[in-house]
Length: 57
Image 1 (cartoon, helix red, strand yellow):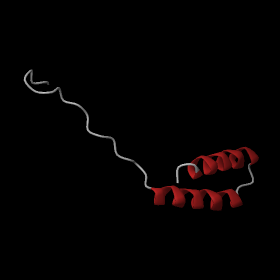
Image 2 (cartoon, rainbow, N blue to C red):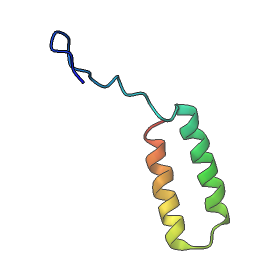
Image 3 (cartoon, rainbow, N blue to C red):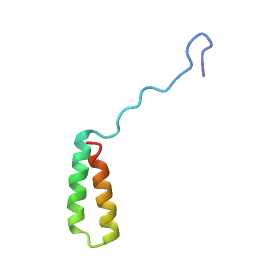
Image 4 (tube, rainbow, N blue to C red):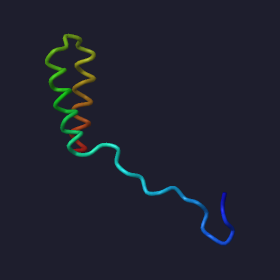
């Protein structure tokens, strides 16, 4: 509900869901998992995600 004499209620500023340290940990976990998988399709997806996470940290 908005008060006509005040500003309308606006959402607060968005906060990051993951920290830089989280991205590093996720990349490490993905690298470890990649070493144990034999599925070439899954490995390609893991490598792509690993690369994308690296662009954020």
